[in-house]
Amino acid sequence: MLVRNWKKLMVLPVVVSGLAGCATSDHVTSASADDSSSSIFGFWSSDSEQNAAAHAAIDSATEGQLKQLLRSGDLDTVYKAQSKALNASDAGNKVVWRNRFSGAQGTVKSGPVYYVNDRRCRDFQHTIAYDEKTQVIKGAACKDGERWAALN
Image (cartoon, rainbow, N blue to C red; front, top):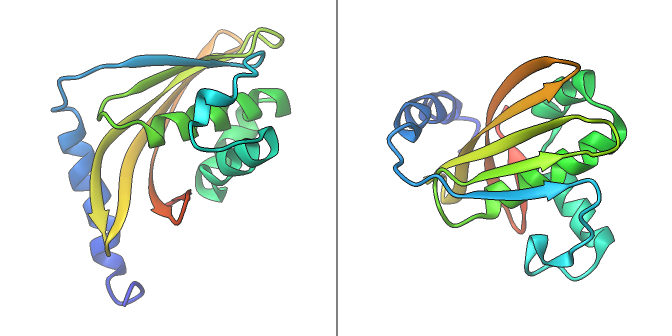
């Protein structure tokens, strides 16, 4: 059924992206490379589980672009911020991240929740500042069990 409805699946994030700008709330939280707090993910209990879930939040669609821009230590911080933004309850939630070791920094902003084939989905936008440049990467992800998977 998912394969048959792939056109709908591709159009819906574009339509919802346009609506994401209508959100009036702009909550800001932060994540950093030296943030060792386990409460960043709430219900996960160990760092290895947190990292696995955070890495699952961004799959090959976005990860390839991010890997071209950032170092490994930056990617870990971005993965945590991505997971935190997607799991936030409010649309327009903005997670600010910074790697104090490399100087890279940015934000991840989540859009409103919508449903595709009974799966919870959200659009997201990364704004990344590195080496005096700024890059914006947009995408959409749906929750698959306890993990998020980017829509390709």
